[in-house]
Length: 504
Image (cartoon, rainbow, N blue to C red; front, side):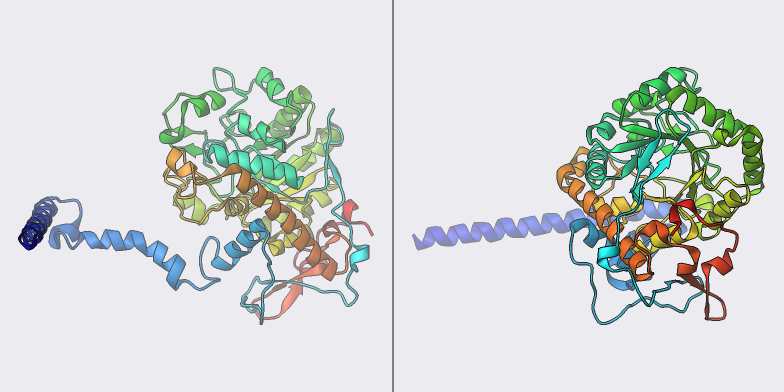
């Protein structure tokens, strides 16, 4: 018996030693092959000069982003959203306590810091009221009335996954806010959730195009026939890529997505950099009138503001044609808006940030007497209550967010939206990765995030002494200047007339 055990142990040692030798030999062979490949290639100087070990540079460069995010960056250092901002969105989505202890970690000294002005006699809870309803498109056959101040911005089915669309649509319905389709067309999953929908018409007219790629009245009527579709938004430009159309890699253009958009399967979906049929301010009004006439629903446009003289031309022509010709809303997008894919030259350098463009648009509407007729929606890095409250102070009627709701879905800011490798299943069509995103659970988080946002914005409004968020005015917020002191927004942007919805 002892002899058998010894033989068995000796056999294990022998096979183990052989396995180790084989493994070491395999590693040496791989190193030798990599050495030959690296020293022979002429593309990468580092690998040619430092064979094998030079490859570690690319590994560490790739991993550096993750290490900085989790171990080295301070809570308020990261871009585009820091850990503190993401943590607020995560806690709000999960319905967790969002109070903090000891004191703020926010530096209040940098130029541009926003400070809200608390009232000595804040609004009592008994006097607080929900946001008041606003009617968009009073001249349309089917106006849209809503009280929601925070809504889901445009994210196309294709850019985001089926479970993500389902979660957003169901969550938006439960929260009582609307959902924008993005330029990728109307999918069954937008409708399945039951939310109010804003149908976005991009430069390629996806979902409402004819066989030649032009706007189709027949397709417009088909989309408008869905009761959930409440408004139409013409996208002139997008925050992260003004002057560039949408980009959906061919790997994401599945059979279903190709059918919804009306494009070939498996090919890159690249929209024109502008609407070929809109060449002037007058053409904008012509398209608005056409879509409103065909669909019977409110119509507006979305734009990043850069050059702004055209706004005066637009508003002047509206007054010449009559106020009924005006777009029912304007969505002002910020230069620091988000996207699934765009050239860095546009992401980093093109367009005006919302801090400059929103007050400008509101003031121009006031100057031309159109502020009551045209509602203002604002988009661009609006993911925390302070962002939304600031926008309302500046004159916005509504705010919308895409990336905030992505955080509610579980986004970890992996920055892989354009690679079909999103680890949370939000921006990928890989079934294995999508499996991690449960639409039912995430719909609850979307609802929680929207409702907690509305509540927290209300808390800021009540501290400022007004009963509901749309009563916030520019004098309720101040901005830190170069000299270290702060000035009220109504001094920084003095052109706003009293807003009809904010009348005391």
